[in-house]
Image 1 (tube, rainbow, N blue to C red):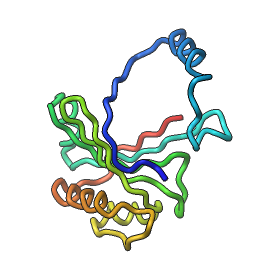
Image 2: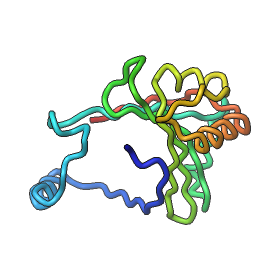
Image 3: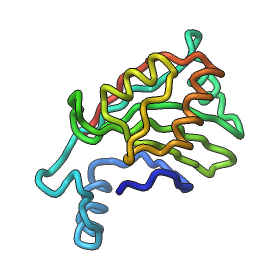
Length: 151
C-alpha cells in the first residue's frame, strides 16, 4: 500500500549532465527501484494540476509565501479508465512539505474533482483525505489548469 500522508523536506537542484551521471553511478547500486520501475528503465508520471479561474494557487506559489498549497491528480504510468490514480493535496509551510493523498480509480477521480461529490467509499480510499480535498474544491472552486507529464 502506498503511503498516503507524510511530511518531508524537498530540495531541488539543477544538475549538469556530468553531475547527473556521477550521482546515478554512485547511488545506483545503493538504491532500490520503486514498484513502477522494476520491469522497465523509465515510466511516465502524469499530473493534472487544479487551480482557480484566475490562477490564484500558482500565482501565490510563485510569490514564495511561507505557506502554500496545491491540488493535483497523479498517475504512475499512463492512466486508463479503471486504473488507480492519486488525488493529492500538497502543502508547504516554512520548507516542510506535507502531502496527503487518496487512491481512486481514474473515472472516480474525474467525477469527484468535477462535481465535488465524494465517491462511494471503497477500501482503497482514504476518507479523511477525500473530505479535505472536497473542502479545498469548495473553498477555491478549482478546475483543471495544467497537464504535466514526464518520464
